[in-house]
Length: 413
Image 1: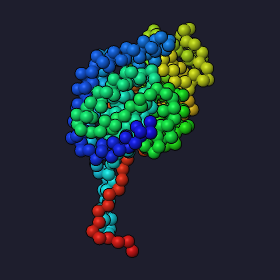
Image 2 (image 1 turned 30 degrees about the vertical axis):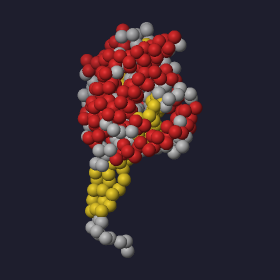
Image 3 (image 1 turned 135 degrees about the horizontal axis):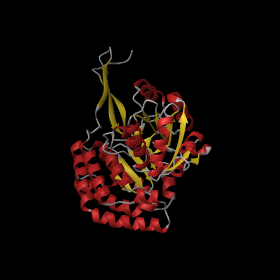
Image 4 (image 1 turned 180 degrees about the vertical axis):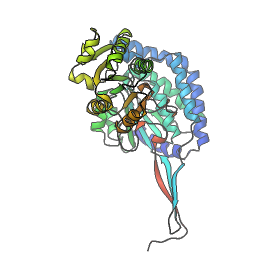
């Protein structure tokens, strides 16, 4: 691990100084290598999935782990999309001239070395590697033990792309062991090699990283996402958004975990929304008003309101208008992603302004909490903190900045 740290630190300087054309050449080669390696990637993934099934992993876990032709092609398409993004390195964020004639520029520069610790999602190997490269960073990837074989196969394709573009192979480094001690070394900064950490995984992993890391962390602990259906929502739109937000993919962090319905809309909207979810195979846990509209609804406990299920389960309840929804989200939410469905623009603007979440939507599904859907090509994670990066962490969020000052002999009096 210490040798890996030294190699990736050295590679970081080469990548930081690499021109955009060279990085794009590597990304193009990676894209082709992923496609050419499809059979090897799927074979490795099949072994990981078989092992997970033998360990009686949940259906949601298997869904996150499993790859198929469509998902491998999506990885390749993601690399293509990242390649086509504007290179952020060296872009001038702001510029001004001082009265003494000095010109000051704020310029984007790479972070350095990013450490990514992730579980079960092998596609993170490709997304994180490509995003870090595009932003001029080197990266240390520590995949979950459950997706170790899949990640190795994907990583081999990324390294092939680096070599074809004559960039150091260590620029995208995969931790070569499943031993948990490797995580501890990364949390400590790997001997000064790693500048920032990004955890992607379950609550226990993220909590450990946030509590033990000695270097900055971009992360979200939970995705307790809400959809609030206002009295002035269009019924058909509300049904479409709620169903998609919960059931499109239940295991993603942007999946809705709580449905809130305006008390004024409850007589006409609550029953059809709840029945729709139940009929789609979603368990509904509700307050007294929600239990009253359908006998299949189970009672919600206090802890349900703040639970990230990552499964076909949702908590549902009635609130007093947009103010009630905002208060509920502030009390139980995780500052990740929350949505309002309404035709009342005043209520929508209030919700967008006052809900303190990284992503807030009006008349759209919470499942759009994804860097690809933001036009970022992909994302390395969702950040819910307030410093530097918030929401999807894409190429711009993987940079910092410095100030470049051009003078003509000025001295300070």
